[in-house]
Structure formats: C-alpha cells, structure tokens
Image (cartoon, rainbow, N blue to C red):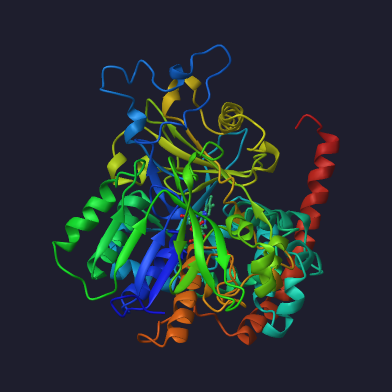
Length: 594
Ligand SMILES: Cc1cc2nc3c(=O)[nH]c(=O)nc-3n(C[C@H](O)[C@H](O)[C@H](O)COP(=O)(O)OP(=O)(O)OC[C@H]3O[C@@H](n4cnc5c(N)ncnc54)[C@H](O)[C@@H]3O)c2cc1C
C-alpha cells in the first residue's frame, strides 16, 4: 500500500541494529519509514546512553540512608552537579568480529570505520595469585598457535586437545548439522575419544561468557558456525571501539538516515526532548531533501499491541503508548503515560523487537494467522548484568583488552573503558564489568545495591581496590530484564522465526531470527534486518535488490582432513595430560601442604 506521496510505507518497531538496518535499506529505496522506539536513544542492546534526563534509576540507598545520598557525593559537590550526569553507559563492552561483513559495510557507508581498532588478545586473570593476566592471542591463527599453547592458561596438552575438539567440530559436514543442532557442545566434545575434562573447561568458559549459556546447553551447530567464520579470518581476533557506541555508531547512523530521507521528523512529546544525536541529524541535512523516502521517528514510544483484520489477515493497526523514561534503563519503573493510542498501519510492519517483547504481541488472533509465532515461546533468553565503575584513581596493571576473570562465580569479565575510549584517555580508571551468568543473582528479586555489592566483592578478589576508591554515586547497574539475550541453546533452530510469516504485511527481524549467521551477534541482527527489508522489497516490487554478504569458511573437507591429520597428536596429548594429572595427584599426596 502506498501513501499520499506514492511511496510504499513501512512501520518498523524497534530501533536496535536490526530495525535501523531495515530502515536504512528501505529508506534509500524510496520507502516511507516510521520508526517506533521505546527508549529515548537508539541502538537497543548495542546502545550507549547517559542518565542526564533519566532520574529514576538511582542505585537504591542502603536502609537508613536518604535516597539522595546515593545520587551525589562530596567529590561531586561544587562541580555543578553529580558527575554521573555526563557518564556514558553501554550495557556491556562489545566485540566486533572480522566476519561481520554486512555490519562493516554499513559502518563504511556511515563513515565510522576509523573509530574501530584491532584487539588481538583476550586476557585471562587468576583470582588468588594476582599474577599478570594471561593473553590468548588471535585464536585460530596458525601464527599464534604455539604461543597460545604455551601461554599458561592450561597445560599445553589440554590446550591442544581443546583446539583439536574445535577443529573436529568445524570439520563436521553440513549434512550433520541436524544432528549437531540436537547435540550440546559438551556432548559433542565428550564424544571425541581423546577429550579431557580440562579441555572441556576451556569451552565451557568461552560459551558461558560469549553465549551467556553453558556449553552443556549450547547448540554444537551454532558454535560450529561461530568457529568456522572466525577461523577463516582470525587476525585480529576482534575490533573494539575507541568511543561509546552512541558517538561512534548511532549518532553518525542517524545523521546518515536523516541525509537520505526526503523529509525527517522526530515526534516530540512531553517526555521526549530530542537529545544531541537528533539535533546533529537535523543539522547534517543542512536543510536539503535527501533522495530517499520520508523518515518519521517516534521515541519513548512503545508498541503494545497489534490489531489484525480478520477478513484480509493483515495487520491494520497498532497500539502505542508513550513512556516517560527508557524501559531498557529503568526496568520495572517505566511509567506508561496517557491512554494507549491507536496507529493505523497502512503498509508493511517490521517487528525488530527483543524476543520477549515480540512473543508478548502474539495473541491468539495473531497466532491463528501465523501459528509459527507461538513457537517463540520455546526459545530461551538470559539476562546479563553489567556495572560501570568509576574510580577516583588510576588502577595500575590492568590489561587494555577484554579480561576474563577465571573461575568467577558469575562468569565475570571486564573491559577498561578508560584505556580505550579517547574521551576518557589519561583519566582515572573506568571499568565495565559484566556478569554473563546472572541466573543466581536473579536481578528481578535482588536489589540493585545487593547485586552491586556482590559483584564488587567478587571483583576485589582479582584486582586491588577499596570501596572508597570508587565514586559510589556514579556506579551504574544495568540488567537486560525484559529484553534478555536469546541464547543459542540445543534444539532452538527449529523454533526461531524467519523474516516472513502467515500474515502478509508482517515481517520479523532480530538477532534471534533464523539466518545463516545463526549465532546471536550484531552481525546476526544486521543480517536479519537486511533479510526482512529484502522480503518487503520483493513483495512490494519497489527498489533494487538488497545485497546480503555471507561470511567465508574454509571448505569442510579441508578442515576435516586437517583435523584427521592431527588426531595421532591428540592421543599423544591425552597421554601427556593423563601423566601430568597422575604426577600432580601423587605430588599432592606426598606433599599435602604444597
Ligand atoms: C550484554 C550483551 C553483550 C553483547 N556483546 C556482544 C558482542 O560483543 N558482539 C556481538 O556481536 N554481539 C553482542 N551482543 C549481541 C548484540 O548486542 C545483539 O545481538 C544486537 O544488538 C541485537 O540487536 P537487535 O536489533 O536484534 O535487538 P535489540 O538491540 O534488542 O533492539 C530491539 C529494540 O526494540 C526496542 N523495543 C523493545 N520493546 C519495544 C516496544 N514494545 N516498542 C518499541 N520498541 C521496543 C528496544 O528498546 C530496542 O531498541 C551482546 C548482547 C548483550 C545483551
């Protein structure tokens, strides 16, 4: 259906990476796009935000203390307000991998590639000994295999066996994908006759932190995809940003969209006063009309329900509600203001929402037309917690790259923003600490203060600091309750949605969609947005085809042959590992005190 100006119109709910990607490609093809976003900032799980206009999220005061005491501290007084107002927060540090071709292409178009720097190493920190963190460099690269084996993360024999199981997984032919999907990574590894428990531990750690799901629950098929793509381009193992994602990605992206658009309107309401990124976008247009369709953005606006016309089976209207603060930041305290407002859906609708939000929209009437959408409820999501810590001093000796805290109870890791973000250069330490396993912290039940105290206690077992070293008022906790991360668990592939469904004008995008990327990543979100946009384009027949790039992999036959060739060494390594265990256990028997 076309609007008055003759352009086909598309409504996109969700201004995360998937929604923005779809908006970008359709806008440049002349579609009129209306973007609806619940937060006051764009970017979704990849976004960065400030608390400047958001007052409800103060860390709860301990019993007996005035709530306001947690919002400022003597250090901030006399500086014209609490320092936290200027702090940027990302929910979690982000790794950008080489094989994210579609993401890189977008970043090139919005001219932000300069903001990314290569980071070859991931650091691993032990608890008690406070030894220097162990770097593991460019995993999968032939040039760093030997140093990684000898790095000290495990015995060389166990490290080799860890690599061997990964090589055997990548060497599995595509026809075994169905079996791999029903097999956990642990089960696959256990099925290799040479595996040791210590080799298993390496994979457990990687998946628990990167997948937010332990290896005994994670799909071997999805892990194979991640390894195959990574192995083809292992150097550097990742890229990191030198600024927060709002400055580095989303402000330039919004500017680009505004320049593309024939007209650009950001709807204001009493709670949404467009922040700097939106002003920059308007300025970037320099009063000119772009070559694309019209862009209308509704921020702090939540899609609450869908209306379907039983006769045509099309979505005809949506129910919107205004929020007075960003739901992602102020989970559980979001006030929906006013009565919900109906909005007519004239053309197509792309839902690029978090999985939990999307499944909440699937009413029996929607499910009647698109029965596969009820399968969303089989999919599992996990919360991940992050805290930003602002220190009053520079902590010495912290690694520059992502640092894994070995054997930490909540699968913790941290990233030192102050060594990486140019805006924080030369200042005091600022850490983003992530708990990938937040299950036992049950963020819905525990207070923010309890969660922060628990994580600080654990962190202090790895790095030296006192509570007084922190600006307490600037400590920022973020859970992703309500928009938890989809996890690639065993058997989930069949339940994941595709871009199209039984409702002709409804499309789905999001990192959990079934695409060749498979693994929940930024690239997965981008590709899902591209596929949804291409599906709209094909149905409407308007605009040139949307390019979607697939990551390369080495031929499975070559990988399989290489894994086979290494097998004899795997048995040798297993023998070494067993001998090492036996010697160590004898030693402990003879010298129980070390
Ligand atoms: C802690 C964490 C760490 C991660 N680290 C990495 C990493 O290092 N590398 C990597 O590649 N990937 C990483 N990811 C994954 C990556 O961030 C996501 O896959 C990607 O950002 C998802 O984008 P999306 O657009 O699919 O969904 P989202 O980002 O969830 O976007 C959905 C949007 O919809 C909005 N919304 C929600 N409900 C409504 C509603 N009812 N109405 C209107 N709008 C609504 C939300 O506010 C949001 O903006 C990480 C994810 C998390 C949670």
